Amino acid sequence: MDSFNSKVRTSPKVRKKRRGSSRHYLLFFLTLVFLAGAGFGVYTLLSRLPWLNLQSIQVSGNSCLEDSLLINIAKPLLGKNLLTISKSELEASLTRFARVREARVSLRPPHSLKISIVERKGSLYVKSAEGDLFPIDDSGLVLEQFGNVYAEDLPVVGIHLANKDLKPGRKLKNNALQRILKVHGKIRETAPGFLPQISEYYCVDNTVYIIDAKYGTRIIPGSDKLDKQLKRYQFVQDNGNIDRNSVVDLRYADQVVVRKGI
Image (spheres, rainbow, N blue to C red):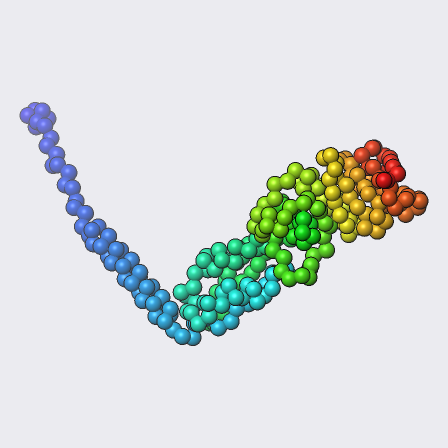
């Protein structure tokens, strides 16, 4: 009976000691230190090898910017080891040109560097008060113009700004110009075939006018179905007898209204 009433004593659980965990952490840390040191050593060795020195610079993607202009930006890097060249710094130097929308620099061992350019394209020429032409993009940003040869065939806009107000990199905030850019963008989107026929834009009393380079007539574009209106205008112009000084109003639905010009 005593044996049944007696309490069965169980031995307490023995906690096993974790052995070696701190050793694993230490080994992992030492491995990282070794790898970092080895990597730094290899980098230091390679960065001193003369056969990795920059010898040639290649340029691609540019049409308005001359190769020599872009190469001159990177020229001070010639003779430097490729591993010591900062691509981000060189890209920042290249994008100081308003013409450059994006610049990418890639290192090509053993001794070459390539510059890939994405240019901003001109949308219009702004004619200054002095009579000079300055290209702008579709947002009104003034772009660089190199030399006296105008590489882009663009319509002209006169907004009576001085040369000093048309510096590359400046975004023009002019209400008449913004209206013209909006119309030009709509034509480029819906009727791109008509773009070569536009020689000039101007704005009078918030109304945009287009000068037809082929016929010399002035066109007032509409806001809706502009592509169809321009096709209708072209048909009337090719088959009718519209006076050169006439004003053709396309703001009326399904009509081409011709007014006698002054």
